[in-house]
Image (cartoon, rainbow, N blue to C red; front, side, top):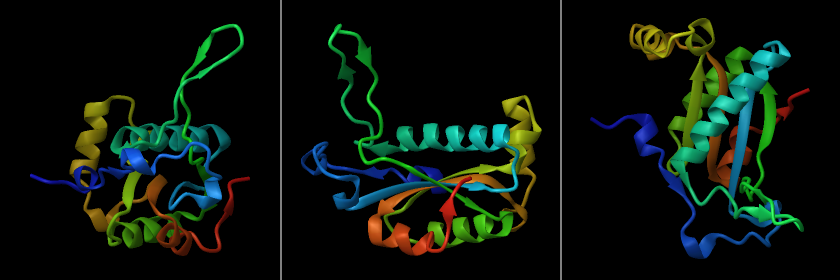
Length: 160
């Protein structure tokens, strides 16, 4: 059985990775949109959770490890950058619905059930007993063609 998440496996081919390029010149864009009404700790938690899942589901997103002058290694970071935006809960729900309809866009979400359970199996149960139309989200991560992502998030501001 195929799911939205499985279909979202997209990213860069090896010849598209150019760590010397400006983030504005890269044909793909990555944004994380967070429910702006969440308290700071929960907002950061939501952003980190969807970012972690995004790096696992996109190819070529993380850059090479950096090695400092003392030969200490610092793990690779997203070489295309990531913008963190805020939205109302309703706009976040609408954004996810619009994004999943776009070809070539990876959509990684964090349903609100994730922050209301402490056991992952309980989260799976809560989501499994919720209709998609009734879901709300703490955060949504979008990765895809720059022009599509820009259109989807038009009017949103950086998360304060």
